[in-house]
Amino acid sequence: MARYTGPVCRLCRREGQKLYLKGERCYTDKCAIARRGYAPGQHGQNRKKLSNYGLQLREKQKAKRFYGILETQFRHLFERAEKMPGITGENLLRLLEMRLDNVVYRMGFAASRKEARQLVRHGHFSVNGNKVDIPSYLVSVGDAIKVREKSMSSVKFKERAEIAVNVPNWVQVNYENLEGKVVSLPTREDIDIPIAEHLIVELYSR
Image (cartoon, rainbow, N blue to C red; front, side, top):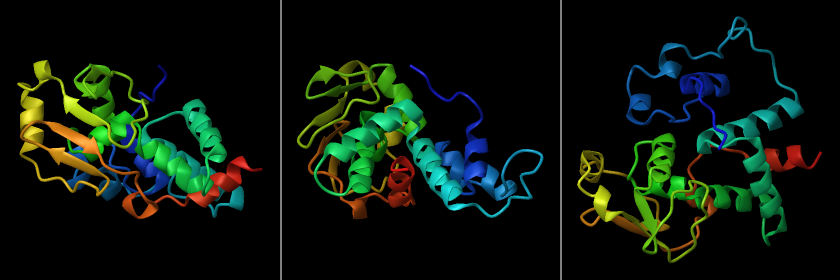
């Protein structure tokens, strides 16, 4: 499966804000935005004012980079969001939030979405008792996500269980048993990512 393998701090600098792609490092003085708060490249410090198209494109790129997916997958989710009842932009964000790798991150079992994606790919989680190793798997309300029994002894999960995490209202987590449950669909207020989704809709509607 295609994925971005370049330096992730460069992505944060390109968007001009923290995307929290490196987990705990993003909260320290080592964060690239704190040290070099301008776009990468030779002309990074001479950025020009963006056009309307440029603003729309940057919002789309930002959303893709927050969730760690590439264009084809993102476009497919947008097309699915368009066919759903309700507001297309909010539907898109809701679909992105319901990806298994994002749910694992939201539950606090990983320090970043990138780490969550890797843990899922390595088969550390089950959904409703069945092993699922596809990061893009869309969970549903009522689904139970659990660290598989053979992975429970991992130091990684023991350390994560001891870290206080701000868990969103639409999931419940039992760190003692290393399991969680999706109790409702996330609302727009639950999604704390700074994305103007209407700009993404405008871009794809051109």
